[in-house]
Length: 383
Image 1 (cartoon, rainbow, N blue to C red):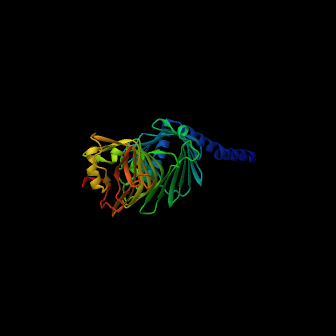
Image 2: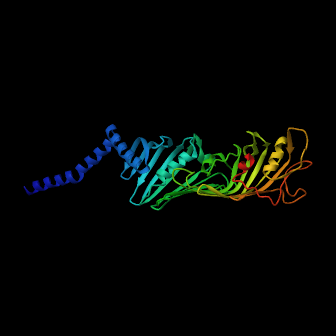
Image 3: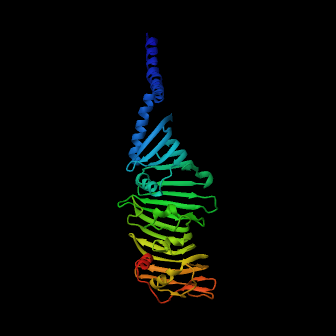
């Protein structure tokens, strides 16, 4: 009787300690692979991720590998406010521990959208997340509108999140010193974000950077920027209480975009704009200084007297009877602040003081003591 009782107790212990948990675990694993189980699992992940990122999340399928490790397939994210598609990943491996959450993204696809929409979503919904533990994100390859970035631009990215500050650092390019972009967000109210760009000698198209500037500056589709700038702004808009500073060179500036005469080009040609300092605070320009140089272009003959008068320049007078006069050298050093701006011509050589000249001599020259009292260059031309 004693042995029979012992056998019953052993069977009960086996059933409670091994058999029952195995059945429960096995049943749970099987349930996760059923349509009902997948629906429940997706619902939990979608709810959690949507709440954390403040965005609309869709997940195609979830693979439960073992406790703390999952594989998410066909994950897409949309901005909740605008409904715009932000990004999509074909597979995301999630590894969770008490100290770190690691996301290994196989392929990340970013659509052809404007930088400001993507960056505003990133600042509002990702960098704003204050994590108690470390979040490590690794991206195997990135597609930008179906263009593979990791093979063409050697893209690397690092994301650091903390309660006080979030930081995103991106390097790309095949050069020894690649382009570098860093976005820093301070979570303390009022939340501010700082964008730092360093091209390290690699010209970058100016067009994608337009929306990071305090105001619209159209210098032509060919314009490229090489240098560094910093833009500090409140989250939600690049043009909200912007503090901005830049130092660098803009190549392939289309002069007719800057200088126009009655809605038509007064001058034609490409130039290089070297920015010594451009500073903006609270959406107000504080100081702009630089040098603009160019070669081989044309200027409207009937515009010269008006241009010389409004910008307080010296000009040669009647040059020839052609409607457009060819020039071969442009050199203008300028400084602007709220008091006005000054313009200076060449500082050395046979044509000191010359701003614009053709092969036979000067067309326009500076007046060294003149200060143009105007809020902007275009305002001076339109008076």
